[in-house]
Length: 285
Ligand code: GLU
Ligand code: ZN
Image (cartoon, rainbow, N blue to C red; front, side):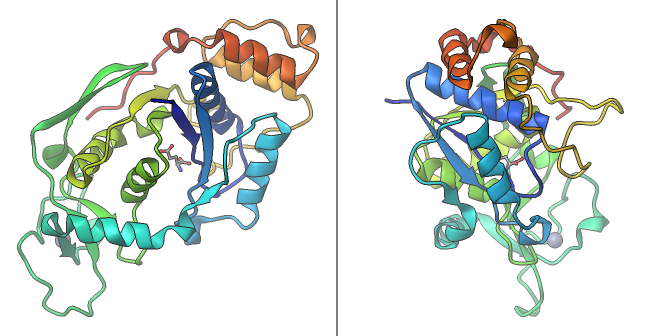
């Protein structure tokens, strides 16, 4: 089976160094395997979207010499597919009218088996979980297990504002696009058991997973669009790519020894080794 990898940014801000690292790792892993690399814009959360960010991200990736296969998929065009998945999950879902603030990290199942008293009332849809450990072997972290019911509780797959949750959309689209190799930031390691659970319920194959370390800023925070990480500069692209590759634990010639972006990518693809990426301490759970 050919390898199909992907990069799936949310257009909540420009590409920063942390997302460049994730893009680079997923790109190199897919290309090293002789596979395809797809680009998907995860633009479901319209309230959090920043106007123009999708185009900026796409342009920045092109400027850095990334070449994606096929057309870019926009999640905002995929609502019927999420609706269909929701219908297929129906036996395991229920409406919830609880406000999120009432609970900590774990939802105690308050609305399980409790029909809506007023169907017009705003509600989210939650997916029933179980407490058997759901495990997978991450290519960087090794074995990771999570008990969904006691760690998270039944989780939201359709938000009360009518927006499909990332958890559902990512699983539906990875299956739709035939993605079988997922390489992304370590902040999503503890989301993965939810994805495995959804894949099982929906009858989708399970991709391989590798969660690359997050870039931390001087305040010890992960670089993210929410903490307004600066856009990666396209001025010294070779130096930036060399820094990304070194961050990923790969050896790399000096930027001065690589005269073009093409030379960088040829070298990086030929030498990519996932085993050299150092894991970050996984979050509890
Ligand atoms: N859209 C997510 C983000 O930008 C990444 C989704 C994924 O790689 O599974 O954080
Ligand atoms: Zn509830």
